[in-house]
View 1 (cartoon, rainbow, N blue to C red):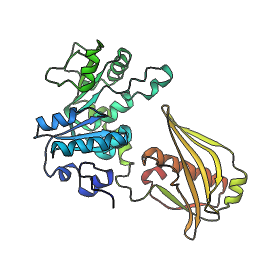
View 2 (view 1 turned 135 degrees about the vertical axis):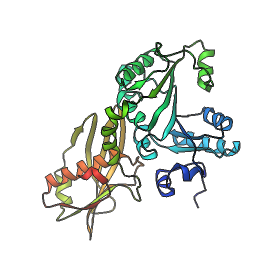
View 3 (view 1 turned 180 degrees about the horizontal axis):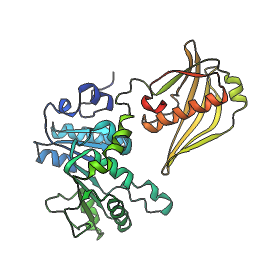
View 4 (view 1 turned 45 degrees about the vertical axis):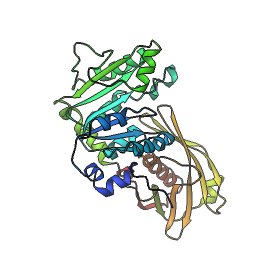
Length: 343
C-alpha cells in the first residue's frame, strides 16, 4: 500500500478537495516559494507566521520527499508541497489573483550562452506569475549572478504594469525584514554579491494581460484521471505506418515536437513512437503507444518512461493525431481527454 503523504498535494487532490481553503481547513493568505530545494526558508517562515499558509513548488522529486519529512518533524500545519515544473503547474494550482506573495530564491542562472533560454524569470513566465498574484501582492526574487540580475531587470522592464517599490533602485543588496536564506548566507560568506528584486502587481496589469493569460489557463485541464490519450475510429494500418515511417517534427512558438523513431512493441500489434518535446533547451523524451482496440485506435503515453502530464504533452498528442490523419485519412477522433488542445 502506498504510504500516506499528508504534506504533499497533487493537482488532482487539490481539484477534488475544492482548493487550498479545503486543504488547509481555513481561509488564510497564500504564499508560494518556487524551487525550495534544500533550503529551510519555508519551514522557518511557516513556523514564524502561523496565520499564513505556505506552499512549496519543486520539480526535483527527491527534494520534495525530503522536504515532506522535514515538515512532519517540525509539526507544521500551514505548509504543503507540490511536485511540478513552475510554468506548467502554477496555472493548475492557483486561480487568478490567489497568491499574496511569491519567493524565488537563487534560481539556476544558466550562465552559458547556449543555455540562457532555460532561465525561469523571463517575460513569458513573469506575465503568467503576476496573473496569479493579487493586486498589490509581491514577488521577491534573489540571485547572486550579475548576468542573471541584468536578465531579470530587462524582463521586468518589459512589464510596465508591474510596480517597483524599491524605485529609484532596480534591485538592492538586502531586503529589510526578509530573512537570509541558506544559500544567501553561503554566497555572502564566499564574498559573492546578492541582488534582490521586489515587485508588486499594479492596477494596470489586469487590463494589459489578464485576457491573454485567462484564455491560456482555460485550456488547461484541472484534473486528469488517466494519462492523456486519444481514441481514433476508422481503419488503422499500423504495419504500413511502421514500414513507411520517417522522422517528423513541427514547431509551435518556442516549442519543437518530434517523432524520431517507430518501434514494434512487445505487445503486438502495438506500435511505439519515440517522442521528444524540446522547450527552451529542456528535453522531455518518452514513447507514445498506438494500440488497436475494439473501440478504436488508442494513442497514449507508453509506460516505458515517466513523463509530466502538462499542456506540452496535450499539445504534442494533438499534433500526433493531425499527423496520423494526414497519413491515414480514414481516421477520425472519437474521444479524448485533452480539453481544448484538440479544438
